[in-house]
Length: 495
Image 1 (cartoon, one colour):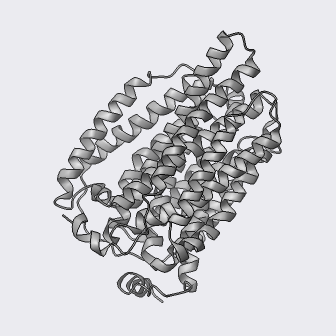
Image 2 (tube, helix red, strand yellow):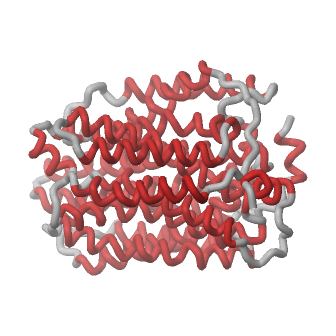
Image 3 (tube, helix red, strand yellow):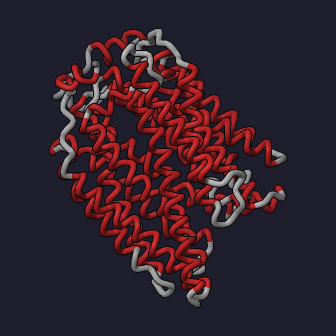
């Protein structure tokens, strides 16, 4: 089957709702995109454990070393909003090859780095490719997979979006146990090259490009909006242990103002179908509610990813490899549950998953508010697995329902918005948990507690905030409904 006939078959003649399995070529396309997306998104958190070693080896300060993560997030924030345009303007294969070529080039640059500047450059190039992959994956999946099978397939996507960031620190710890920090990139490089070569041969074009205008001013506004917010939130978290380049309120204020201008401009441009990000997706209540729940859960996930290693190392005194071993079962549990949740979604809809999932997540976060300096590591392991299982029940139906509730011509915009907001939620969750940890740790220390008990008190306070937020998610779960074919919403969204 040629590329053009494949696109015609999948887009013009979407398989019937009753189709029970995907054809082999569609499975291959989705499989390649899933593996590629997993590898590139894994890099978003894989550096966290390696930063101390890099600081010593390259002779940089802690505030400088944090730019390996900050530069990655900033690049993602700038590039992701543009992917809505790119996915409409260029062929699927072109976007895939560009994304994987950038990621591969960035990985090689980082692997052979002889100085910190070159290493940061490699991370920026990596992030440019990473930013394209997730919207490409989501848009392609929504295009080629019939509605009756989307839950099952989206269950695999939840592995990419939720598990990859969660297992990043574990993978990094395992590699650093036997190799220097450059080994992280050398391990990833052959996988990236293989995905690039195989994808270049097998990935077909599943969408039809169309000439769409590019509003350069919107790109500038989005760069300052999302970049300012994410940099400001990251700075807010880093300020606890380093001197930031700019005080957090400055970039956050710039980001808020630019975001308001960006939204205003998109509303004006979308009336002529010229918006960089078409915000009419938010006129779908289902999309808005599902996205809000996703963002709150991403905040909990990223906040937990940053907080638990601090607690396990500074309070319980565990080594990085042991910390990775404790956090790994949760990531695996989330990955194994994703496809199962997808099958349940296809048969019963989202409600039977999201409400129990929200309750499980809330229970896990409340249990983490009980952490003390004497808590056994086994309790942390159990709470993290419980949290991961709850998130596994939530992510699949939320991803599927959100994008399934908007018309097909807005899939690329919806995917880009989900990706951009995920970055924002991750930065916000990290900043919120770290700031609460720091404030309450200082307060406990001023009250006479030693470092260990003060850190435990700060950890409890941070998880208390997350637990309270989780109650909002439980309430929101009752407003989730099945993503019917959005024919009835099409009229609203196109005006």
